[in-house]
Image 1 (cartoon, helix red, strand yellow):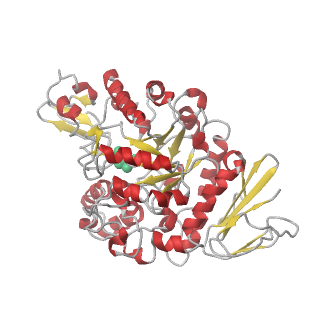
Image 2: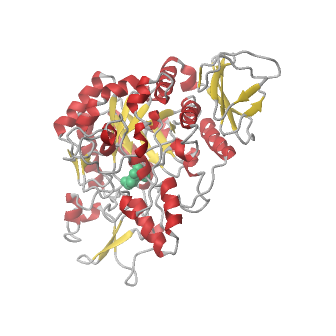
Image 3: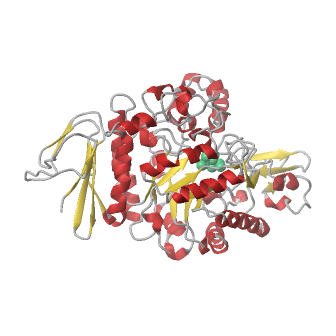
Length: 541
Ligand code: GLO
C-alpha cells in the first residue's frame, strides 16, 4: 500500500451549507459537483463529506435512518455516483462520514428493537432495566441531560451518548457488526476513498462501568472492521478520537496494527476551556500551552502512527474569530494559522470557508439557533440560573452553528449559496468575505492555502521532516524547524497584535521567504521586527 494519504490534503464539506443547486435552501450533491473546479484549483486531494445519508436531521445527518440511501434534500444515489466520478476526473477522492456509534431512532433496526426483548434487533442497541425505578446510572449525554431514555412499552432504558434520537449501537453484538461491515463494503464498492469515523473511540463502551471512550474491545473491533472491509482497499481512514493520548493514538494508527490510517484528536482544541469543565466554560488561550500540545503530538507520532492537522471542522468555531483577529488582521491572522499548521507533520484538513477566512456569527436569541448541542445547553443552563448574556457569550464563542453558516461564494443574495430561502442565516459579512473576491485577489488567503498545498506536494521535508520547537517559553512567538536529509526549514509566527522584535541568529542573514504573509522580500534572523501576526518560512540549510 502506498500511504498516499500522508501526502494528501483533505477538504471537509458540510453539505447542508456548501452549495444549493435547486433553490430549496439546503446544500446538495449537485451543488458540490458545480464547485469541484474551485476545489481542484485549491489543489486538495480528498473531500471528507459530512453525512449525506437518509436522516431525520435531529443532529443534521449524524443521526442516520438508512445507510444505503441518500438524504432526498441532498439528491439521489445517481447524484452520489456522479459526484464520485466527477471528483475522480479531478483526482479527488470522496471520503464518507461513517457514523456507527449510533443510528437514528428512526432506523429500522431501532424500530424493530423496540418491538420486544425477543426481537433479534433488540440487542443491536444498549438496553438496561431500571434501577430502583430510575436510570441505570448517572452517565450523561454529550448533548446535555442523562444518557438514558426510558421506553415505557419495554420498561427499559436505552443508551444514547448523544441526543435521544441517536441510540447507541451495541458493538458486542456480532450480527450488528457484520451488518455494519456489509454496509461499508457497499460504499467501498462504489469507489469511495475511505471513511472518516465519527466518535469511533466510543464503540467499545462498557456503560455499566461508565466506560465510554477507549473501552476494552475497541481495538479488537477496529481490527476486525479493517479485515472485513477497507483493509483490502487502498483507501484512507481517519478516526475521530476526542480524548486520546499520543500513546493511545499509536494503537489506532500504527501501521502494523491494521486499524486506521490516522487519528483526528482534539487536545489543542480544548485549551480555551476551563480544565475539568465543559466546552462552554471559557478561558483565554495561552500560546505556550498551544505550542506545547502541538509539539508533543509532532514528536510523539514521529516514527509511529499518524495525526491529522486542523483548526476547524463542523463542530468548532472559526479559527480567525477564535484565536486570531476577525477584523483588522483577518487576512493576516488567517494566513498565519494556515502557514503554522500546514508546515507541520500530519495530514492537513481544511474546513469549507477556512480558505477564505470565514468568521463566527453573533446571535442573541434562541430562535436563531439550529444546533441541538447549543439548544440543549441553553435550556439546561437557563434552568441552572445562568444569565442569557453568559449563555450567548458561550454560544457565540464556541457554538457549532459558527461553522455551519452558508459558504460565502460571491456578493449576490445569500452569498450565492441559494436562490431560495436558506436553512440557516447567512453571515452578513459576505459582501467582503467571499470566494469570488478571494479568487480575484492574488494576495488572498485562498492563494496562501493553494501555495501551501503545492509546497507539500513538492517537498518531502514537510511530510517526513523532524520537528523541533524553538523559543518554548516565548509568550507570543511560535517558531519551529523541520529537518530532512540535510535540509532545514524555519517557521516563525508572531501570534499577537503587537509588533515584536526577536533574534534567531547571532549574525546577520538575508533569507528569501519560502512563504509568508507579508510583503517583505527577505528576513534577517539576527534582527527580526515582526508586525502583528506576521509569519514566514525560510530555508536555513
Ligand atoms: C463530533 C461529531 C458531531 C456529531 C456527533 C454525533 O463529535 O462530529 O458532529 O454530532 O459525533 O454523531
